[in-house]
Length: 403
Image (cartoon, rainbow, N blue to C red; front, side):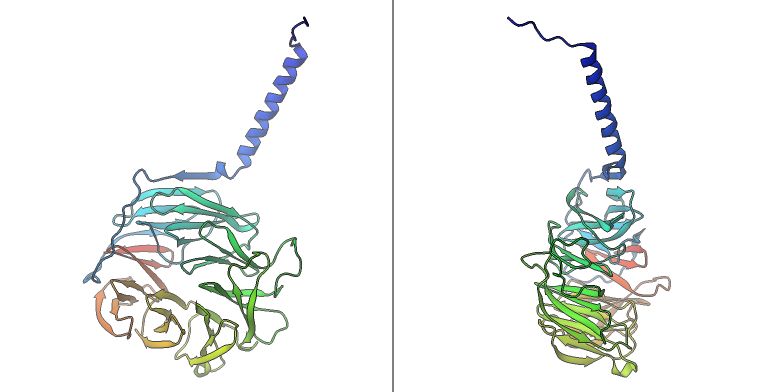
């Protein structure tokens, strides 16, 4: 029978050394990890459902406000209102503004947007605005996450199906599980080179509409800006499929931008030297211009559009132009002096005005009445959303709740 094995002093010393090395390595990994700089406090009681109202309000008064410098529109997600500022996303009670949940990282927030009844927060690290986290709207629980190369500044948009994250050199689209469906523009160390259709171009604006993505870009050496219409979810997300492309405007009239996209239509604002010559150009699914409409009055650099029921409302800086969601043709122009594109509540279009909120018929643009509100001389754009019987306004870097 062989003699039993016995540990020597050398064995014990080796084991102790290994244990120390593992402990040190674990500590270093923790100190450098994203988890160390993350605080996630979920709701003890998730936000309750906010039922839609049947009629627009007769009066509106402020009930609370909170700083939200990392959002461009109020975020209503699954019963809660989310605000985002200084690396922290906070889910709030819609009636009181009290904190329900909180998600915080020691990274700057690039932007935050509401989508799929959740809140999607984009943080900046050494790779750009690359750290993306999806949070359940009612509880703040972490859902999907992703990380990839990105620009240092991005603009986020959501069309009801996809989120588009656009920087000046690179664009991505994400589906509801944050899986990337398309990358466009700059690609670091591409596995398959020469797959991008227009390398080296500046990505100026973008809008998703159904299965297509419209991108307006400025490419070196070209006489005008270029519109590209792409499949938003091609079979290979690293190989964009372009349905068509064309030049828009001229090199000496900068400022063109996509106003709206819907189905196989794209509306592009095309500026001109004289204001009387500026227009809204409509393009089909192959980027061919098929219609043109004059645009009255000046258009602000902060002009913005929102889908409100059966129309897109485009706030030009001083008034609203409603576009049909099918052809993107103008249907009416109204609400002179408006401060933003408004939002739908109980079938009516609520439009922010200097002295209150106009209640407008979205089919005709007729103002039915006006609700007085003191906004402290706030200028536009004011973006709005509705959660139950609460009207939310984003005024600069603040979200204001009205009821």
